[in-house]
Image (cartoon, rainbow, N blue to C red):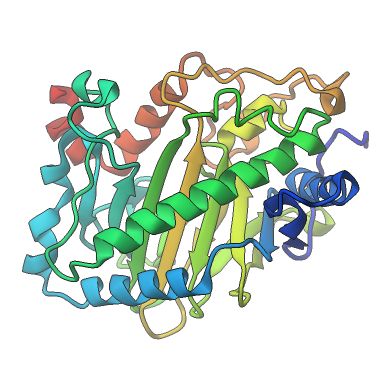
Length: 353
């Protein structure tokens, strides 16, 4: 196997200290060392934990506490900010079973947020899907400030991690932040996975969320102590699922379809899934750091990718669709995906936008 050919075989998700990337005064050699570890993780598993990431624990705990307070509200109170009221901005609350993965309802409820954009913003004035104002609940009223503070902190971390990924490919550290990630599409979710039976009515596992890959470039996930996240591995030549349990002080990160596309499949968007076996509610906060809406994502001309040719792998992918043959903008790709996650909302809202 060539050094450019990822095996997809791993026994556990690696833990990477990223302080050197977050601290702008770090030595270049230290930054490069972290970048090399990121590159290895992107090739082998597509997943990695980050520690010493610089996001304040107090902010994380405040957001987690407020999120639990929201999900403890009555269904009527939560539905006051249901996603249908967010229009094409695709923001707000959905109840358990309101989101589909692989055509099956997920056992989770959630809140959708994104970059806060007022009605005067050009993309909002143009009616661009997934852009606009957030829907925040009346109670807890302080959730708004916590979410916006968290979005700002994770955006800074996202740029730092993308700097490391650029270095891992032999590119300048600012390659992404001065390019198509200069104004990234930022999407943030707060999910609550309630406890329930291990099997659904059809006898299949009652997944919190079924097998899938993420759509964009980088996901930064905070998960609580309940666990349940699993990552698909081909360790030993056989497909199996590797647990990614909670690790104190960490975020779990994974790369998405667009980074897979940019690296011609060398960096992997790896399938993952969630099942809540803890017997209690599970809180999960994924932050999606993606290309700009109108970006046409193309393969990178990077030193680390010289001589690499794209291998079509749609027959191995969870949805049997190619991330390499796709033509269009990231917005086109994303709309095609989210329309399957919320088919009714797409027909009611986006088709009329």
